[in-house]
Image (cartoon, rainbow, N blue to C red; front, side, top):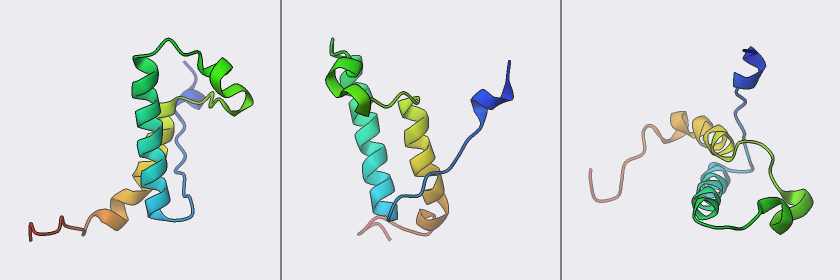
Length: 77
């Protein structure tokens, strides 16, 4: 098995918020596709993401681990 398949690249969009929003969108799309008969290639054509969607979502979320480590939920101290 080739190691090329498991290379990981962090993705940094404009802001951390953009990363979170994009990752959530990817995950939601994957969930909806799981429960649908929609052919993504037909639906999205050239805009269809051929990369593993969940890997892309992880690539968007991993760079946020450091910046959000010190954040706390409001009202929970």
